[in-house]
Image (cartoon, rainbow, N blue to C red; front, side):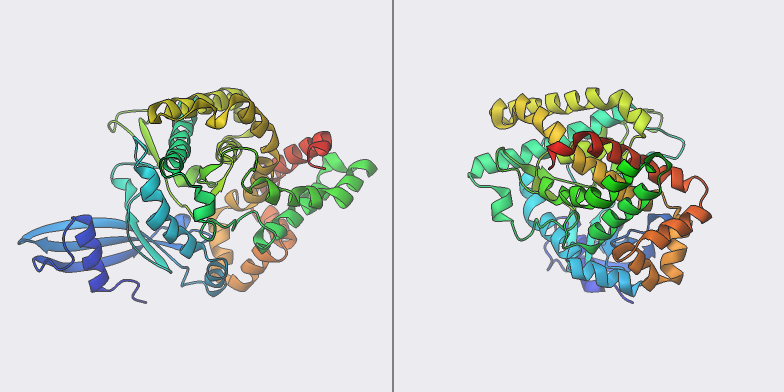
Length: 414
């Protein structure tokens, strides 16, 4: 199907070049939409590269963009996206919220959105200046610190906007910033919690009568409390949180091709963005990207670095340091840990599934794959365990850490 018309492409080019849409000297010579690689397929959309060949004042130019659209090739996946309103939410965030926040930041916070509809977005192609880490590259403490500085800049800039205009983002944009992820209105979340309970009951470590009773009688209800944790916190200032800073949503910039460490970063995908505690962004990063052993080595340093980076942003913006105090920070580090552990256990079965297996299931059994994700996940988990060596060990790791934490700290969430 034709996702973009030549008239829309002309509008995109005019906005890119900062020209009037009526400028008669801007002529689109050719345009192509190229489907993204299979491993880049998203769970909530299809990805393309848009290439424009144009002439302006008789000088030819080539422009390239990144395009996200509803998953038209997969009917159940498209129906899920439309039902949850993920594109409407993200386009509204790009149009109404992020440009205002960017005014208070001293770094690039997000890719420019040149055009959007309720089913599609045309974004700046970050790969011209940024890239993902390669499979042969690993995150170091320097990488984590850079991303945490970026998150601190986003969080502080949202507070600065609020202070400048004396309002609250969460109130003004309440209808836009709905919780689409960790909500019992989202069947993916409730199905995922049931999947965690299923895996916990299978885990060799928890075959005692006491552990099985805890899993059967208490685990689901405790995990469901995550929905409360991701809501705005009444006792402190909340911020605009990205809420999805995993590896594929983080792009790094390098001073030159020979540089081994990045000097900048940028984040993409604002479908899950919320107004909530900043620790949800911090802990999401630290629980989703590093391994458990890596996290143990960097965890305290990263928390301290984020807090110092946030306070430095406050100072730069002329904000009071006690907008987010040390006491509030430490309390949130403890309180939000359950949310981070739950998110890790929920997402690991999908992020650690081979893209070959995931894309094959989604292409050949779309209705069943949707059923797996949004109704009953047990069969899918067992199938992938058989197909993918090491998969069971990978997805059991967060379940074990989550269960150990809850069995030791149940009283915090009772």
